[in-house]
Length: 326
Ligand code: UT7
Image (cartoon, rainbow, N blue to C red; front, top):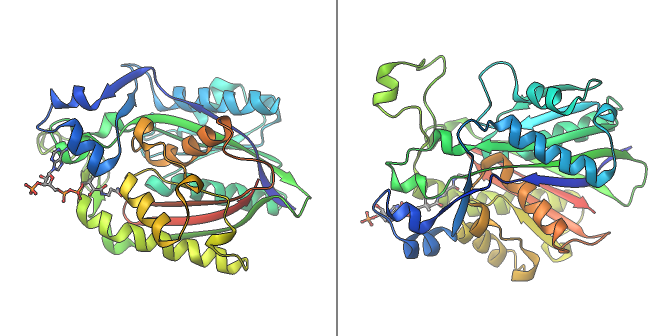
């Protein structure tokens, strides 16, 4: 028994924040943002809109595409670093909104690798016959933990959600062929949101220190990204007796256009084999890979039988890669 992605779905909030808009908020400019990151616009949630709202709409899109009803779902996994609340899990709010009364749900926090970690759980549940239909959702409202006084981070992060429906298949020629997950707790200070948590509970001081927002050592993170993504991608490909030249499409976490191009160049993957959505989605952490996958799917970039390499890199540090036969 293998796990297979049978449909994709997404939801992006209507409000758009452009590079020009950001020029009025911090000392930055469209040219710097475009050249250094590849980002042109980003979607931002409305006041009152919560992560489970985005996740619910993305899940509904994936369910409708596959003509599957919410009652058929066994598990809902939400990967997010911006849950509706610390408790209960965002997946439970999604379950209620969907009316997925036969499912159980939980959240996963692995930052920008969250979707891949969630996919690995779905893969394991399917292989062990614990579940047959699983919604794997990446959903973020990063604008709520972004410091719009810090130009080094506020130009990068954005909001959005995407979902894949994972089902069991007995066909050996399709589905998730392999996954590799990595983390290194030595680098937890490269990217963090210190509060609220048991270390720094919500307090006036935490707010004044801006500890409730993302703090990132961007350049140090960047320097580790390309080689880490290459290492883990090579490892999963080698384990399947494959190499980069066998890949039809690489769908990467969209952190920085230069990172994706750097990986593609070293892997000798031509531009048409990479998916770039950072220009229109910016960095949506756990939502980024499924958003890129959904965009590729809906825009005719994927055909049946394609070999797809997924890979991620993020806080702090987590990184991963997976190979899928579509
Ligand atoms: O999502 C997963 C985890 N995150 C990542 O993978 C992010 C990886 N890092 C990056 O994508 C890049 O490091 C950034 C886009 C965050 C920054 O780009 P960079 O080329 O590494 O810039 P830098 O931090 O080395 O800064 C270069 C210069 C600095 O000015 P000085 O010291 O040379 O005068 C910054 O102050 O650019 C300045 N700068 C800006 N200038 C205009 C930083 N942010 C901005 C800005 N607008 N928004």
